[in-house]
Amino acid sequence: MNILFVCTGNVSRSYLAEMLLKHEIVKNHLQGIHVASAGILDYSGLPADPIMINYLNGMNVPSGNHISRTISREDAYWADMILVMEERHREFISARWPDAVFRMERLGKYISPDQLEDDIIDPYGKSPQHYRVVQSQIESAIKTIFIKFVSHAQTQIHNG
Image 1 (cartoon, rainbow, N blue to C red):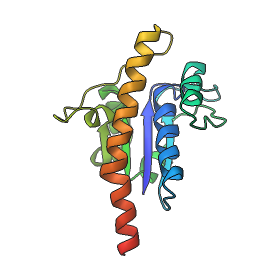
Image 2 (cartoon, rainbow, N blue to C red; image 1 turned 30 degrees about the vertical axis):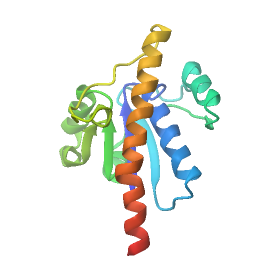
Image 3 (cartoon, rainbow, N blue to C red; image 1 turned 90 degrees about the horizontal axis):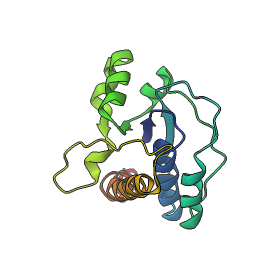
Image 4 (cartoon, rainbow, N blue to C red; image 1 turned 90 degrees about the vertical axis):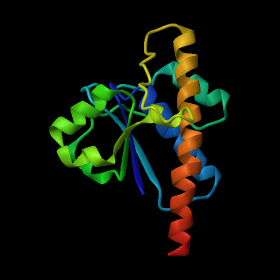
């Protein structure tokens, strides 16, 4: 199973989601699940947002040596599941790779029980409160995704 997180610049939201899900996979000794992240704008080569790195470090989650990158055609077709942060990210990807639309959802869908596909707004450069809200939203969504999809996929792999 290949999971791709997408946001605008790949320095804050998609990076955080990638690191949190990778941590869950490693912590639970799961195999065959690959996670990556990318942005829709060409901010390639930037380091991760220091506020997100500090957040991960505070949770004892490895922050890696992240370098931002732009989504590519290969990414869009590699991913079994593409989780975007905002509707405009889905629109960007759909316009370039229409076949990917069936594998895309907004990550915000996994925050609340009503499963409305809400946007997760970009906190970059905003107040600490904006960051706390986004961090909480992404952490909650990752927990739900891990339980719903990743652990289920691992069970399917073991059961053949």
